[in-house]
Image (cartoon, rainbow, N blue to C red; front, side, top):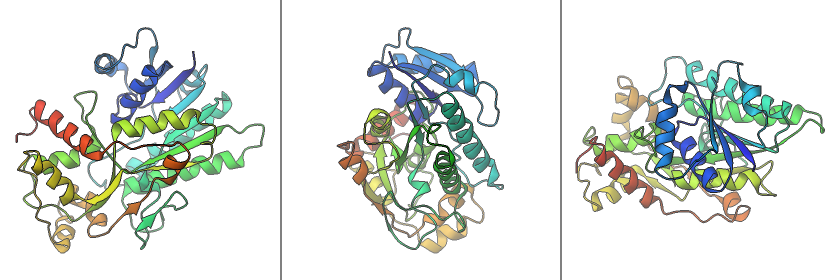
Length: 336
């Protein structure tokens, strides 16, 4: 039975990756920053899959060397999903860049030492589509980290580029196969009650926090598809060395809210805020500052590698939008 290390086991995407790996018959080792969350993770997974004796939990910290070689030893594959994600723009960008970069390097170097068959990194469209005037992107593009962009976007670009540069620096006999998964905005129900930072954006639209909607344009993909792409790219014979953008479609946020309103979530605003207002609010509001750089800009992308190499067929993102809305409603976080 093949064994996979999944870092960031408690995360929104990590939990779905573990569930799909277990469903596919793999043995899984999931890492947590603290074992205090182990029972929470096991309970969440038990709702969708019988882990039996196929799930092991270990403790890893992105900023510490301890335990990495022990965690990777005996694993055929590594999925490095763990990465910091904030719902605000930090005062010091290193707050997010340092753990993203250092954690990735600990994971890839340990994978090289232990000669895993393939390393799968959870990157992001953030590593591709920012710091440019252009508005149409594919896997050949890189975010320009010399420009004034958000810390999260910069962290993903720096970390992913460091991985590819490190692998290129190795001798041929030292190299291992690697893949980067670059999802756009990931939406859908969480397997635990922790809905994840990436869903907080929609929560704010649904709970009446905003009377108007920021004029922001993103690609969207469901969390189930994101996990599915990780599992597919892990073993596909032609995936090694590739990046895979994941986007079922690209749309303005007000279009997402129109979908929500169609299904009874009337608090979701559809009147767009003036761009200048959002940029002004960014001076005083952490949430507004996190999206200020996106306001008024279109971000179109395709998923050609996923479609052509992995033969990927995307789930309609409306399913994910409604699933997270329904979960937030069941948790009592929002009301229709």
